[in-house]
Image (cartoon, rainbow, N blue to C red):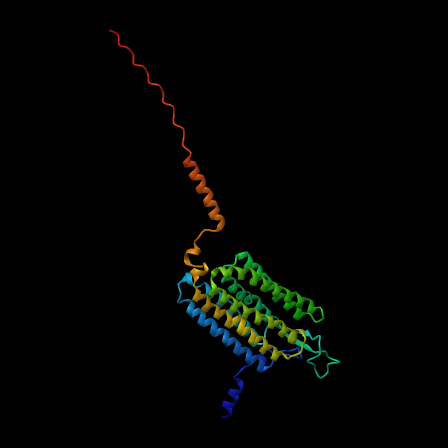
Amino acid sequence: MSDFVELMKRGGNQAITINKPDGVDFHLTARGSDWLWTAFCVFLVMAMILIGLMFRKAPNERLFYYTAIAPVFFMAINYFTLASNLGWTPIKAKYNHVTTTTQQEHPGYRQVFYSRYIGWFLAFPWPVIQASLLGGTPIWQIAFNVGLTETWVVALLIAALVKTTYKWGYYSFAIAAGVVASISVMTTTRNLVKNMGKDVFQIFTCFYGVVMFLWGIYPISFGLSEGGNVIQPNSEAVFYGILDVLLLGVVPCLFVALASSVGLERLGYGPQAAFSPMPHEKTMNSIASARNSGETAVSTPKATPKPAKKAKKSKK
């Protein structure tokens, strides 16, 4: 019986025991790690289901699945790292909302997971890309939106690693980048979606409305955790975890169902679209065809016939 009890003690989540949070006062505990493992399993199951459904489609019908598998798989790797208590650094807390018993002599250091931001850098642009696909947004506009989204992530990462009040400057840059990205989608892409039909416009409005709502909560979570040191890292893990599962897990999967109901052909991503010439190719082809038609239209001058030679008179 004692051996069984000892075996049970050895089982379970040992991440905090193996990867100890040395050098920090406010850190993740076993309960927080348990929740992160749960979120990891959710992302992993989503990724497996999406991959299985993707392989049931023809290769030229998998576009929507690619846009959902990417963020879900990236976040599965991210949450494996977080749950293992890896990818973090100690940062001196600026505000003493969460304190230590010897706060005056020993300022508290908070555990900041930079690996979370690496996962966001890889996963966050995909909901924006999905919304852009609904309107056939030009590639350069999508690149602009993605760049702003990445700026949002990088600026928040720098803000989390800065221990002085200058962190709020980067925090402001992050919010500005996110706002401009959403304005870009809600103007350019929204106007393009109107041409797709009323049903597609409603899908876009509901889809990106949810994206903007969840995206807008992230700065609040940052202000309560890495920014303001108001909540413990365990609460931070739960707060971010719920947002990540919804925005970077459920929403991308929901997009696959919504976009598939519309269809690739209607959105302009059918099989024939993959082989259609680019606009500049069409222009060059039209010029070449016009040139050829002009050349054939010009008649070549006929050669002037030579005068017939007079027949010589025969001598009698």
